[in-house]
Length: 320
Image 1 (tube, rainbow, N blue to C red):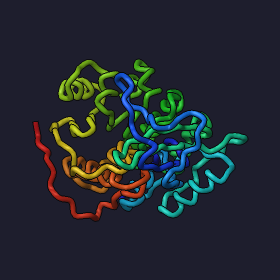
Image 2: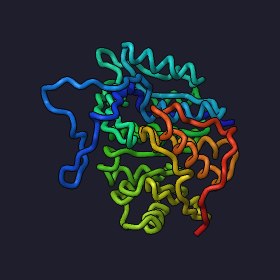
Image 3: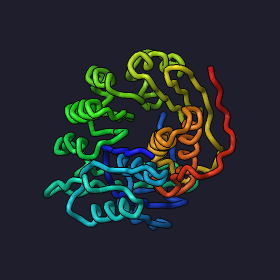
Image 4: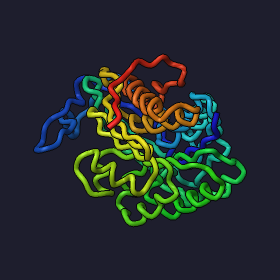
């Protein structure tokens, strides 16, 4: 198995779950939770405390798959931070490289969840996960990772550059799933991709970075920057290339969606977990899709994460 470092955020996710009050209302071209009147008290059906954040979600995927998983990120000195460390310890994730930010709270998200549709609105206080400049890339020399998996670092391109250059120097491979604040710095982001081995984006994100409107066109342009690229498109499936073959595939299974939180993290980290275990590119795409499907079928970003030992059924996937 591999040694994989996950660099990203750690949050406490507080779910407010309701069947009646979080009903979507249409306002123009958008949907809102329209049944809550200002100044009133609303009784909800359930509350659930979970651990989220792209960094911890991916770290748990790697650990459950049997890899040596290390999480690097920031928390505060508070009960939310303690809950995150307890969860990482329970899952077998190495938290030795977690850093504390003084006088700043651990990041927290309040998630308003409509259990009928699985859709949600997330209110997030980034807290300690808003910064990454304090993390030390030289720690990678001690860890000696096989892979560095990076989700958003809130647009901190200097930190990305430090970690990417160090990983490249050490011979570690890099998988990158950038977020909105990285995509807003298009020129810098494209410059960073020379060190990236696998790039994961959704269709809208890919269209921000390179020309094109359809998946095949977007993938073709991304392939000029990275050897392996994957573009997801929600219920429409995804497209991917390893530089040799290109695959178009649908969703793994049509399940009742309970909570979409963490679906993207589950796909990306599930794919890498399977690939780093020695499986083929095609099988790893299937496993990533199955991992994402399993996660949206349960509450929270981690409950449905698979282990790699499950018997998976075939899914629509073809070489193009």
